[in-house]
Image (tube, rainbow, N blue to C red; front, side):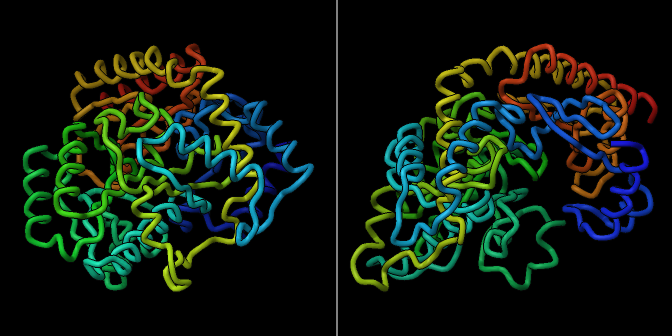
Length: 435
């Protein structure tokens, strides 16, 4: 692409495209966006010919890197025979084979897979399952959910109720269903467990489910907490007959160092939501897994069926690619290779923790994060100073306000990871030393 063609594309973009999580007035007048032409492995390649390390795995989706050749081949093979069909009264080999494979690697007891398009709809499906489960149970209807402060579970209106990030939730607060936000265990384990225990003791008969992001609260600021909270949450929800829903959209598929974040606590939820890395960043695809106990509550009269579904539910292309993702994990020992890489991330963030102006540097598996001094919040601008310096050095590390983090592909080449971490460290040092 010539410079003139690039400039024309950007001009046209600013005329017609509304970008996510973007103040468009600022974007149109101040931002010179990256124009990406192709991607391979851990790198993006822009229209100016630059190679840029993708430090966020494209919003946490490309866990196997970009354009993994086996995923491209799986997509091509499936497209030659069946791109899409409804899953209503129809089945097909990719949906069946992927369901079997996913259940096999999931926490014990999860036995049925319901498909949708993305993380938001995976959690939305879980909410509707929980509500209808109790609506059809002997204990009677329930209307309330529990979630954590600083939680983020997606964009649809239903899951907006679960959100504990004020910037994302405030405009819609009058419209959302009842949800009580409990203290996050990232702010203190005992306080969080005490609040959960009290809420369940006092209100269990009206609570459908506790919905949590296990071990890392992603969009809320990469807030990390002890697996003990998961163990106790599982115990308490069982005691009070409340469903436990875990949102593994970000944490699943190895991000925390184990295949599921739940595995750190050796617990199994009633419902598990997964997306993002599920399809290797190739296609929108998601799954909501449920136990047999939940599933059987929907059997019987036609009115008891789960009357919910998305047009592309179980899309054959997505299912075929997602099945190949699991084969690659097995064949290439992806999760086993995380330990060496996670040590490099941990060492880098430990060094950064000693800098004046850096608060609460932390890491878990293939995620490292730190807070720059100042106010926490998505709309803060401190992290963007690091972003701009890192981009000039050849790495894309989009921040969460004053939270600077890396979540690269799980199989990122060691040399690329070392380069990414060097760029990040130099950029953070430059910012904090100049403030």
